[in-house]
Amino acid sequence: MVRTVFVNGEFVSEEKAKVSIFDRGFLFSDSVYEVTTVLEGKLVSWVGHIDRLKRSLTRLKIVIPFDEETLLSLHRKLIKLNDLSDGLIYMQVSRGSAERDFSIKENLKPSLVLFSQKIDLLDPSRLNRCLKVITVPETRWRHRDIKTTQLLASSLVKTDALARGFDDAWFVENGYVTEGTSSNAFIVTENKKIITCQISENVLAGVTRFSILETAKFLGFEVEVRSFSVKEAELAKEAFITSATNFIASVVEINGILIGRGKVGSMTKLLRDQYLIDIKKSAV
Image 1 (cartoon, rainbow, N blue to C red):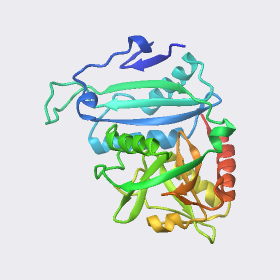
Image 2: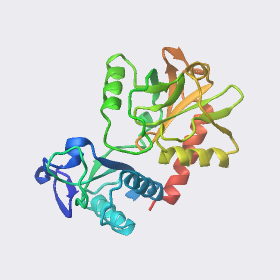
Image 3: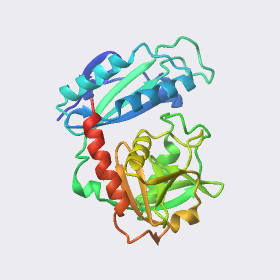
Image 4: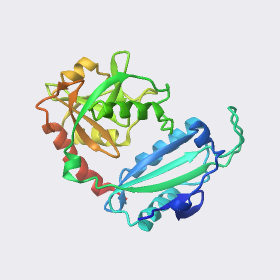
């Protein structure tokens, strides 16, 4: 089925969608994006995504002529036009079009693009995936807290991991895990403590990460926000990643070392089940 997408003020067929070759998002990755989960036709963690979009735009000094209500309305219309029950809405804002120049001109008109993707996110085989990851040196730029479209390093690393028989990779800086190629990383220690690194310029503030930490507190789990080493990860009782496209996915192998019993951990499953209950209630 041909999708309907939104491009700069118009809903059009994906086959007719166009952006300028002079768009700075295309030329310089001078753009930010958000991916919002859709379950049963409703948007998950909308407030978290719109707040992070605002932070990213502010950091890059991009001002868009759309308020939150307008963006919400566009998302809802796209869901309706594409008869989307479960899946994702991708939203991208670029600084706009201008003659190619490294210096940024003022008062450019930002470009806004949205499209949908149908994915059966609640498929049990997807929810119960057991991932194998490898650790790799951090190669990305220093402002990973800004959700830009500058994703080539992550794309190359993930592609290489898949080619080597793994599912993903975790970046490592100064001996400590930062995050996955498109997810936040967690481990669970032998004494059932959940650990994930603190948010900084080096790590994206994952919307799902925040929700999972709230769920963990609700369930009475102990959480410690700090850096953890590769060795500590390899010795973990459980490990998992979080993202809008994965919710929570169990990691059962790190650098060829089996984690726990090599299957979805009990704490990971409890977190996932409660999280799914919570987001369905709060979706808009």
